[in-house]
Image (cartoon, rainbow, N blue to C red):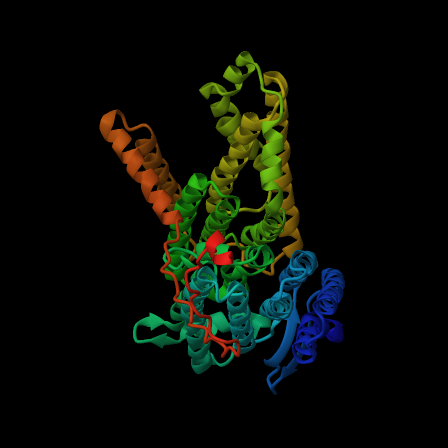
Length: 548
């Protein structure tokens, strides 16, 4: 088992090093990386099965007290993340082998993507905090290379610069967190983070507990990696990256805040300040990014801002102590966004096919677009479905997590139902029936899947977190947000129209990346051996007299 645990992250890295040194043909390089990614994914499946049956496994070097000095350790949470990272790497490498065929940057992509997959796997299963820091920094470097893949094209250069600045800030915060913990209690053994959290809580810097300092620094590192407000500008700039890079980023790397805070959940959960900061930044990001997504008209732009909003919701879940629900969200979001980005090229043809569908009659259109229909199917029914599902299926959620699941889940399912009623060519009765059925099925599938997921994880993440944001604060914040939205939407008169236009313009400007072009370097001309061209003299036409 130890050899397999080492092989999963090592295989992509070894192939990347071989390709980087041997410089094979692009087709050979793509086949090698796909094969290595496939073997790594297969190994991750075996690791997950073994851990599920036999419990946690490790391959570590320990000191005299049994504390890990270096190595890898995996439990059920780590095995899920390992399989997710390896699986996304395999899918993206396979897609890129066809998508980048003939691209002169294909080899660079395959090498950097393999290094990224290896480092991301190590972040999930490394046995020490210092080892996690090294793997985290390597993911930053590999991701910066991928984002700037199209350099010297100036949007790619600008996106890479924004990303590097954000990554440096987050990496420095994580470095500070590891240094503080090492100075205070020694390197953290990731197999027993709870014990280290208790030791950090017993230490202080002045009047501030060391565990709070470390937890806040971890939040900063996660915010920078997951593009939360105010360190979010780098993510929309990555539209300049090729589609395989976007899929790898949005499916496998952007969830860094969730991975980091879940792995350090006992430390993070010991600081009320860190959890409050995470909750506040997450709710602001979810609100702004979702609003910007709704006004975007391009496919990739909408997906990018949707990812930012989803990361905000994920961090909100962490802020209320719903670690298992956040991990479930990470897995679901990764699979969904990988499919969406890799299939974004078919969105135009799909829209064209939708436009060729037969139009509904005036009566059916009036029924489907009626405010009462939209309110019942798009809001009241999803809320009722979630309440019923939570009553019949107990997913072991806290009160704060239950409020979040009902509110955000109902809004997501309701929006999907309204979209279905806007696009379907069916008659009114059939459309409403399928929408109702879809709402009920989606709701029970989500709650049931979350319950199975939490049961599988068991006690590997904390359930009752005293420092978490409580249900009263969650309800109050959501009520204020709902009140503000309703005030803007239903504000009467000319002043209301002015406010709505201003909000819309602000959202459009926020979603638009205005970048100053990077001046291209002057390319020296090669000396030419051709004779200098001379300006020809004016041509004189011959006349009959001249010919004579």
